Amino acid sequence: GTIWQKRYASGGDLVSATMWQYVGGSIVMILGSLAFETRAVTVNGELIFAMAWLVLVLSVGAIFLLMVMIRDGEMSKVASLFYLVPA
Image (cartoon, rainbow, N blue to C red; front, side, top):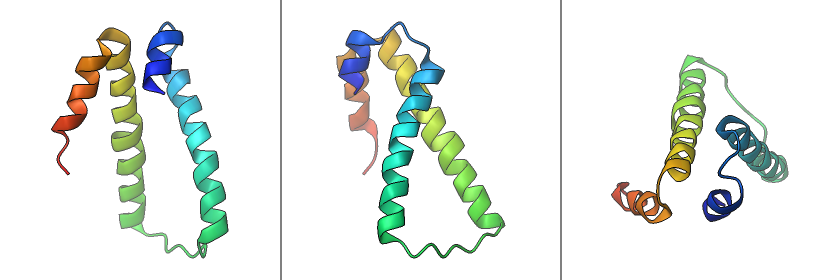
């Protein structure tokens, strides 16, 4: 996806590109969860905070930053940053 975006969609709007990536991923995950999960969820403050942090900061923020780096930099430099993530 990142190589395709750099080559064919580098001039597009980053917010809409990120939104469409999340729409596609959400469809796949919703279908998988409907097929394999029990649908039992206990909603409390801890769950709401954790989901907000995961969605807003770690997902949307990180992907938006990745898109900016892909648009403005070289692919080899962006790809080398993935090796800095601790396992």
